[in-house]
Amino acid sequence: MPSTPAGIEDRFKELFLSQYKRLRFHAYCLLGSYPLAEDVVEDVFVAVWDNRENMDFDSGVTTYLFRSVTNRSLKVLRHRKISDELFEAISDINEMRLEFLASDDDSSFEIERSELSRIINDAIASLSDKCGRVFQLKYIYGMKHADIAAVMNISVRTVDAHINRALRLLRDKLRHIYLFLIFCNLI
Image (cartoon, rainbow, N blue to C red; front, top):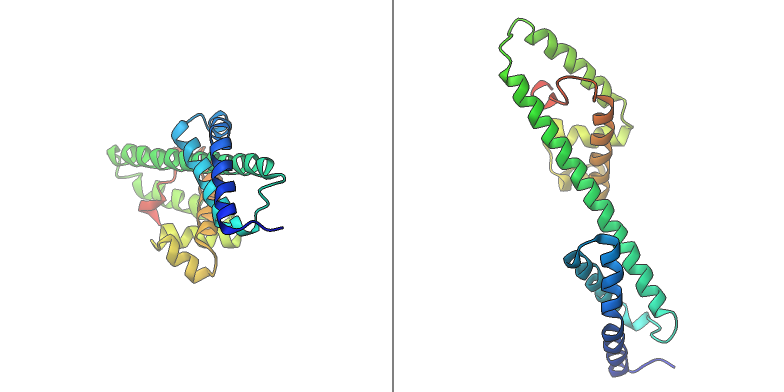
């Protein structure tokens, strides 16, 4: 027998009061940060509230909540790892660019530039078709993520995933090069 709207609100409030601290502690154990843990748990409760008409507050809801908090926490960890890797790659690029610009040897500049350009173009060409296209639209043509998504008829999240994958693969392929990913000035 379905609950009345007031009954749903009471069950939700009871569920929130009885489970919030346990779920926050569970998220904290996964994330190591109380602010992040609170955000995750609040997101889960917002999702439950948004779906309250279809929720069965009497069976399995605690298991559902813990599973949801775990999944959202893992998603946060994956996103944080990708963000950290992207920041690290950008820092490496800027550091190498400064080293390159500090160099005074103009005679070898053009040779190094053309050789590096060839190596980088080969590395970009080795990316999968979609991944390579997204990377080129972003870094060669300077398009924004939303514009790339519209042009390629994919979601912005897919664009983000392709860019992160491309940066990771290119960093691995070009790690041995002294002038790491200075293609911003070469291509």
